[in-house]
Length: 332
Ligand SMILES: NC(=O)C1=CN([C@@H]2O[C@H](COP(=O)(O)OP(=O)(O)OC[C@H]3O[C@@H](n4cnc5c(N)ncnc54)[C@H](O)[C@@H]3O)[C@@H](O)[C@H]2O)C=CC1
Ligand SMILES: O=C(CO)COP(=O)(O)O
View 1 (cartoon, rainbow, N blue to C red):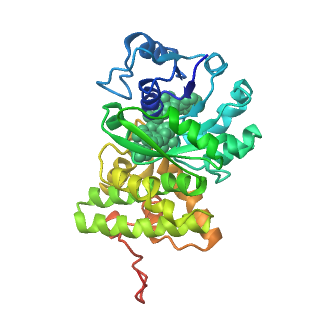
View 2: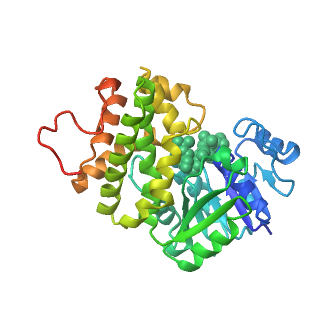
View 3: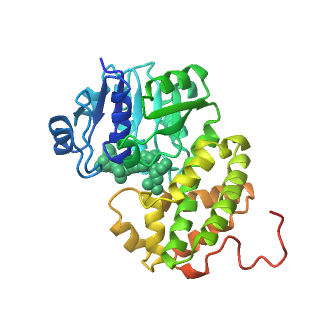
């Protein structure tokens, strides 16, 4: 009986399965493609997503999702956010009745604008206390290379948060806990949008002042948005807020930063999507987050400008930490 199953064998699902297995958990990783499962199981490699990484011998992989789920005591989800609902609809009934369900994802569903924990709750009809989310400055390849890293596990249930945090830790990965699921999830979603903006200005050729201005104002924007939706302000200063913003905005390993960079270099939204080999969640989150902000009357100038650049309605070189139409000085 596995201690943990991870659904989704991309860069983060595979890395997180390694984190769990290296922490001593009997872990099964589900890959959609049989050849990917075979490569992980037999060669201890996932060359497409984690080049150069040898996976632990104790980690098992399969392409049979229902067999993977059978009797697993914890379930971790790491597929692209737009694919989660369908996966749960097809296979949610195979999840063991009391197993905590943990989202590792950082997106919102485009149609419903729901956070991933809300999609899980709605689709499986379960108590929110069974759901946890993991977030933080967690660039997959660095963790797969065992660079010391921290994350936060959030659940409305203290018992669930602690059970997951105890599993998801080892010599190089430490899990803290909190109970602010809204803030923890929105931190992960929204830093992707700031990372897109930072990528754009990097692609244009602007320097550190521009990036620091956008990151700092971006954090203010992210915090206003999250608090308006019920998050605790403190969470946005933690690993899932500021921590993830720093990691993602400063690293070429970030797919959102990379997508933004391509936009800044002049590629269109369609070209950028075609060139990305891994998911950049921010591209699908821009519109639903802009709609959620508008519904709460939250001003998000950086997000607005990213949306204009994506829509081809703004020249990337004009992106700034403020709206150029802001005539009156605004309090920081
Ligand atoms: N890569 C990273 O550094 C981190 C990623 N995340 C989040 O983890 C989530 C997953 O991202 P990554 O693993 O990075 O993406 P990825 O692009 O590396 O891999 C996605 C995986 O999902 C699979 N997949 C796609 N559609 C599927 C479906 N319908 N059913 C099953 N599998 C499907 C793909 O074949 C691929 O194996 C995203 O929400 C991302 O924001 C969170 C923290 C760190
Ligand atoms: O969430 C991440 C790091 O914490 C990964 O960021 P990207 O999805 O932009 O690669």
